[in-house]
Length: 210
Image 1 (cartoon, rainbow, N blue to C red):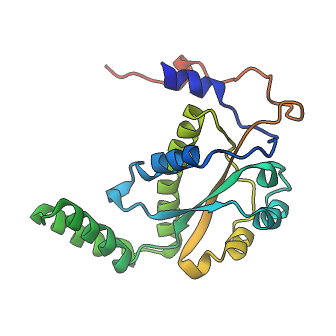
Image 2: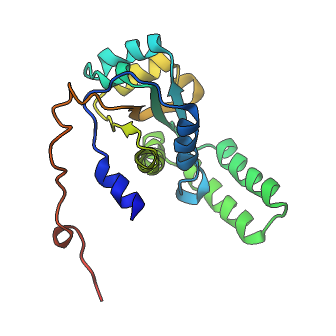
């Protein structure tokens, strides 16, 4: 129930007050994102944590001039792999073998299947698949922020190419997928703060097949 209470408390803050979020809270939010499930366990994304105010000022104009970009404490940029490569796939499989301390024939066969599939696909298709995985972690970060009573505003309204250029993401084989400012709501400036949360009733959202 506590998690549901926190999720009812959260909303997409439209104004933040500039107050800094404690680093231990940010670390727990990032850890929640790190623990998110992803397809084949590849985690095909990175999270760029922007604390530098000058960089946030550069990003704001290419994010529809949304004030949360500059008034947040930490700006999280979820950046997906631009494509799947043999090296990237092998890294995660090798890491798994190293941490678990053994190799498994079924696991190695699965590695070969992915190597025979993903790298040969169109790069845009691969990026879109990787971005979907980033969104899983993104959603988990939002829930974790709510649990910490930290405001987190999902932002898709931005120019990805411009953000990529500002952060030098393309050189790293990454493309920005979605932004998540972390901070605290500015209740005196936010028109949304006192409005009732509206969601579909369960009957319109969920179909149960017995």
